[in-house]
Image (cartoon, rainbow over all chains, first blue to last red; front, side, top):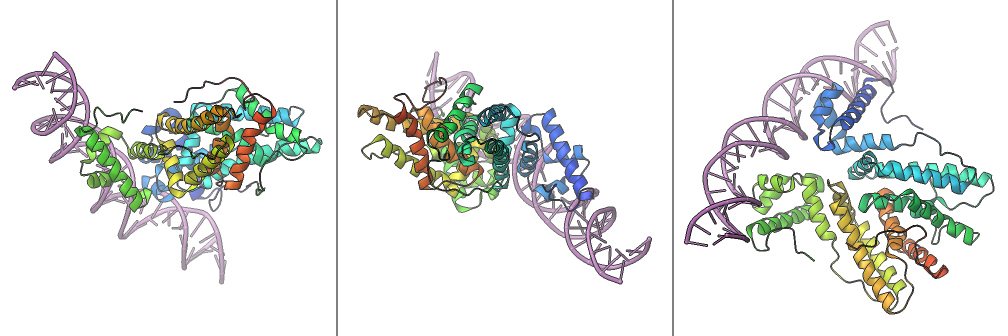
Length: 202
Length: 202
DNA sequence: CTCCAAACGCAAATAATTTGCTTTTAGCGC
DNA sequence: GCGCTAAAAGCAAATTATTTGCGTTTGGAG
């Protein structure tokens, strides 16, 4: 649970980063994304543009940085009494948040950035949330699909439809959750059909 | 099957568009994406930058335009004798192409552009290819999953892993195809678990 | 053939990005 | 606590990209 990559929280560097992030969020809320520029953000943050250029390189990297931070889950998944209900509730909320205009923009910002670090962090956020639900289910002795099966069968379709087609509604998310559970309830095994996969959670 | 959105093929407008596209592809092949700029493309295409700015607005739009065109399938899915084999072969090739460096870049370019038209076109390309396979299977009297089920269970995980995590190998793609067929072979019904969805292909 | 509107070229004006150099500041050994 | 050092920030000039107004070309319609 490292705070940020800066040297020390409280130092000037951290202060600048926080200020730039805050300014970016403020501008993003106030105006269209296409009109947000680095000089604008710099002015809003009370910082010179070259500072931002040197630190982030280009606008896309900064937007991705801000988006990843906003995408970090801030709550524990709600408890409904059963693993399936937990997953359904979480997935429905996830789909709704990601389908919103701002959610879609954040995902695209994360994907547009140069490296693969941002997308992976988002993936690991989802993994962590699902892991919490899975752990609770296991503690109750319930069957629960493998985390990667949930990623493939629930998260992947949700994001795919948002990015490439049209966002799914709650009912269709329910179908995905049912599909994820179908395999577990059929065989005694985990939900995954094919070969092994690493099980790290980020 | 419209050719392009231009007025007429052969007109000046179409010639310019073709030249710009060609120049973009050439530069993309020759140098890093981060170094490709509109003035550079204009020079390579023998066109003034303002033409590109007025037509595409920004680099991202042009890159997306070029990427969508490159993503358009240029072959009919190979026939293996059965729908399942057809789907497996097609999905494996699709996963491999999309996992490559250039494939990943094209997907990201398409997603980064402003409107939703690019991503939708890519989605409909996949739909069309799957529809071809499904039609062949139907002609043979075989059971075959609903196209949307294939999108959710095969395409979505493939793209999700490429974009957010780590690309799947052929073996794992096989697992996805098996999953898509599991529901069809279980019930007599289509592969989809939940409510209705539009069935347009394009 | 002539006209019209859309698309292009050109060049000036504006805005963004890069860069060299100076100044500030956090972390560290004394 | 006190200076030292290196990383990060500020500043301003230089470069590069983007926008824009206006004249010219061109494809299509009457």
